[in-house]
Image (cartoon, rainbow, N blue to C red; front, side, top):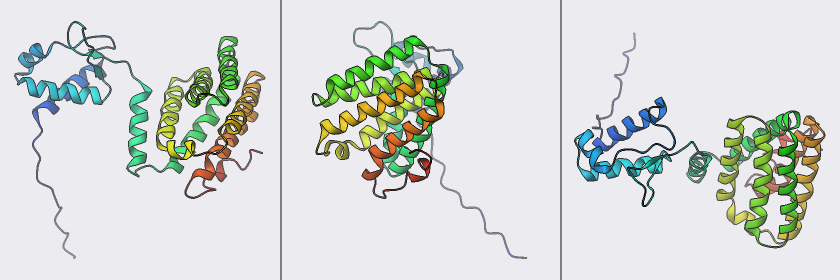
Length: 254
């Protein structure tokens, strides 16, 4: 019988005191004992409760703020405020994973295409008139910003897709959609800004979003899904290091 090699272990690393503070406060937030809008005790009170020094408390609060769980506001009474869940933290995580090559741009775009495809299908089935009006206004704002300030156009475009995600009736889709969009823009800023004819590209986006809106308004989920996937493919696939990587997701999207 072959001898089983002994398991290999790494040296035990002591947990730093501030990490214990982070764990307890994060646990209280997850358990609902601390809710969005609540304030943590002051630094002095936290020092007393945890029996630690001020630098230790400040390091714990710094970590909690980076995690997107709390925010210190100048002039506010009490300690840092507990924040509501936000897509920004998810977007930062996705961007970091992309920059570190843990997640490739192709994977990020594939996820966005699958997410968008599902979102528009649900929106076509669930949309109501106020949500449709938000989409109309966003598209009109996009058209008005063509050839002008790129940030105004990008914001109007995001407003349109945010309205679509919201109309899906699924809060997780809405949060993920926002996060993935932010991560894509952050990761592909250079490629997107190097486009020669920006106005033509913006006008094309307006046309595609208007067609998508019409499919959603008319309650045609399959058409909306095809249009959404094709728009993302045409917009991003040629910018990837391996063009054609998104092809399997648009084979039925003329």
